[in-house]
Image (cartoon, rainbow, N blue to C red; front, side, top):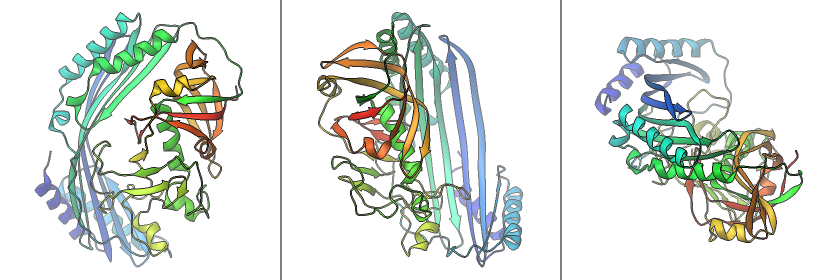
Length: 437
């Protein structure tokens, strides 16, 4: 770790070299490690140390952006001068107003020394434990155990000075036996909270239960989507329409519908990067403090995610959701929550007369952004529910479904939240989910 004093020195050196009306410098230095295993044997262990240096220079309404990955002062200054030169020859952006001004940044617990210091031996021991669980269930394990730490520092010419370290760990497990497969994962910022045997046990039990899967006719069925599937669906919804840029361009399903009912009254979705249940972080990629953002409340559309650029278009303030600039996505909520309900997984299954239990989705893609239609496959554990019980495993099915319509037909919501890649979500019971093949 370079530490805050050194990171700030580097930022100031780059800012001083950027001759422009306004300037912004972002530095992110990352150490990441990955242990990958297949057929219950480790086949890859890699470690990477890298950095992102990103500079935006503004001259009038002309914006230049340049990037590098070297942290020597001379290299940083070269990137800053290149951004200023590019601003000089760029076309004007008539909608640009200003970079953001400083605001107080909250204190957020975003870093775990245990994660940053996690050794290859510890990751190997976890892989060994996962393989042992898979063997007890007659399967073999594949997956990956990743750990890493990042320092992010941001400064601009209007006075923003932001620094924070962050850590992240993840364990992904697939247990397979040639006939069936099961999947489970864990994510968090503190690796000491990981129990690899428990993760492997979930995947192994899914694999064992999935043996003898049979094809099933496509139609509309009641589904119980486990959190991994719900998180996939919610992440695509965010991409398709929960950011301000998609609303301003008329692509979002929320366009013209703020303040209106857009999904079921039992659905509340918010974004909160300061919540310790998420991979918490205190500010966005412009150095603007993160804050809790209620996007959909009891089914009613409230507010999308803004960065400074999209907020200035409407005379608003940023909600702290900028991504690294430049980008084509605009601001996005990437610390999502879906409000839990009161039902256990067992209660949801017991309430289904005939339906399908889905562990997770695979290869999902948006088909129609404004209608929030997405498609994909079930994977690693799909089961038929009959008269309130799991009766038999099914071969995977393809679905094509509007996410907004699915969230308008939620009949039960799980009482437990699971952190997945973008979202912290419960399981959902949804009526009339459309499987197409």
